[in-house]
Image (cartoon, rainbow, N blue to C red; front, side, top):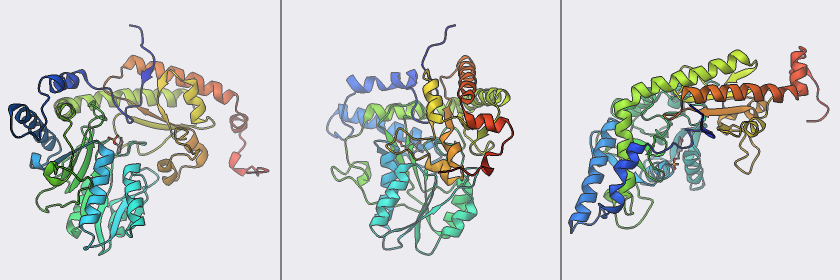
Length: 407
Ligand SMILES: *Cc1c(COP(=O)(O)O)cnc(C)c1O
């Protein structure tokens, strides 16, 4: 079999729509095209029934008691905004303090930044060097003004799985609401809003082989009943939580994507972990100075985030153009700042600039992994051969001890 290039290994950024998801969606574009809010005819009823089925499927997938707890949105960025700003606004009279972490997605961090401008206090709890937030550090950050804690289920850069159940036990005991950005974790690590005492959870379809532009916010309806201030004014859709005509085909696809993971997720994750381990094994056995970023044990199956010391991540990505991956040295953004996640884990700047994130997913094969491993090993060797620092390192010179003339 010949390999098809380029190879996609950036499944934390987005995923290919599964053909079974697409097939489930198609009738809702042309045949059952009704507006789910049309109450006066069959077109509307059909659309509404499909949406309600999807609500139930998604609710069940995350252990929620009822489909009524699912608020559809345009994606997890919107869900994060709605959860954090919506809770902050509604509960402002109760307190003005929010606790989150330094490794959250920008949708959470920037929502918190906005609230700080409006007079809220936000505590940003750092993760440990292993990219895992300690429940105790969350407990220590709580005050009698805290109304909300927001900690992600799994990190999108280093794939570390956060102790949400332990944090949920703490927030529940203290009467503080818990939001989790569950985007990267659902279907990949156990997640149950009941068992974990989660009150709000952000989800998106396109990270789990569903379509882009559709997501959901789980909002607990009892014990406790969570209230939100809507961020979008309009027709009062989604029980007043999010106005706007629903993306019916997208919602149907989202539910299908959840159903496939509920059905095959365990097996799939084992297969993906096998591929990830194979890649790591090859890279570390044939190259020296490969540094794993983030905990190995508490990690998503498809995530491998490593720094190839003495090699610029950007340069390596250019050298492996046939492979789609991400680097911790964000030249995608205007800045040349390395990843704030790696930085907050205490990784030194050079190693952060040398990091590459491989995101293995459903459609990757062993053949692709072997191709990628061979290519990366070859290119890292070539780039290092041009590096005076690597040469000095090989000669046993301790680079940290050198006094550089200018820095
Ligand atoms: C991708 C991602 C988001 C944003 O989701 P969109 O649906 O693309 O808006 C939020 N949080 C995490 C952890 C993500 O990986």
